[in-house]
Every structure is written in structure tokens, then in C-alpha cells.
Length: 156
Image 1 (tube, one colour):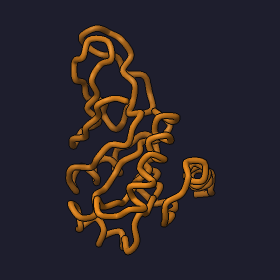
Image 2 (cartoon, one colour; image 1 turned 45 degrees about the vertical axis):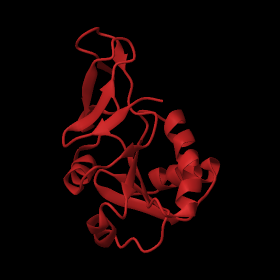
Image 3 (cartoon, helix red, strand yellow; image 1 turned 180 degrees about the vertical axis):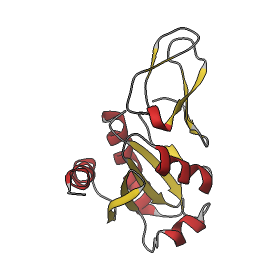
């Protein structure tokens, strides 16, 4: 797994070859990106990434070139802890296809209110800034992936 962070402009990724930290702009998440230092391809996140702030969440939804899968969770929530490794599997198997982000509802309660999150774990799929579908409850990776695929193939 990589070490991934988010800021207002993109995902910060350490180059697997030279270790330099690079930003992949949200708009470029689906395409090939190279490390400016060593020219090796930088891979998009293969693990869920924590959303640090509301403005970063808004930037992701507004600018992401790929779908965004949001996991609304809290540290005290047992089912949330159960679903975390399942989301790890999904992110690992689908880098560059969609971005998996985690929103801590205790840390960012304004997002919970904005999106009317009343039960957790709650997963939502966003495409081009719009929520396409949501699902409540802990599920195995195969069911979560089927939910994501169904959301992405549903008509606009």
C-alpha cells in the first residue's frame, strides 16, 4: 500500500522508485502521470484516502476525473471497522478506475449534515460531482464492488 494524502489540488503520492512526494491533480487521476524527478510512472491511490477537510472534499467532487467512492464512518462504529478492510481490497484492485475516500463523520459533521448521513457505515458513489447511489451497512468487498459498478452503469 502506498502513503497517500489529499490537498485542495490533488492526491499526494510518494514515488515508488525515488520516494519523492508528488501531487496527482484530481483532473489527472485517470491518466498516466510520471515523477518529475526520476520519470517513473506514478500510480494513483491503491488504498482509501482520508479526507482532511470539507474544502478538500468539495475539490475532489468538483474536479475528479474518475468516480469517487465515499465511505462515511466513525472510529467508534464497529461495522465501520469491519468494512474498512473490504474497502482496502476494492481500492487495491481498482486504482485509477475510481478514488476511494474516507469521511470521518465525527471529524467532519458538516458533511454528514449536508448529505443527510444518518446511519454509518454509509457508502456513496459520486460521478462528476453528483451522487449516483448510496448504500448503508457493512458488506463484503464483492457486494460493495457490485454496488459501485451498478451505480456507474446506471443511466444519467
